[in-house]
Image (cartoon, rainbow, N blue to C red; front, side):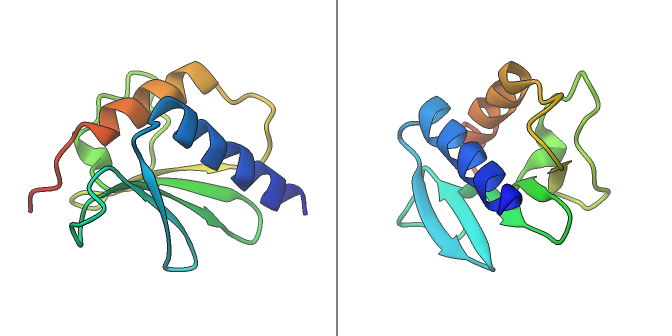
Length: 107
C-alpha cells in the first residue's frame, strides 16, 4: 500500500506542475500527455513496480539532468526509481516534469 500512496503523490505532483496534462491508464500504469489526441503524445508515466515507483520520461534523453538522477540508456526514455518519499528533491523533479511536458514527441 505504501507504493500506491507514493504513486498517487507523484501523479498529483504531475497534475499540479503541468495542469494542462491529461491522465491515460495504459501499460499497467498512468501516462500523462498534453496532446490527448495524439497517439504518442505522452511526456511521462508513473508505474508501480515490485519495490519502487517508476517515474518514466518519454523523451528523457532530451532533458537536462544536472543532478544525474535519470536512469536508462535507451534512445529516448529515461526514468527515476523512487522507493520512498524521503530524499526526493520535489523542486528538481517539478522542473524535469515541466521541461518534459514542453518537448514535442518527434521520432
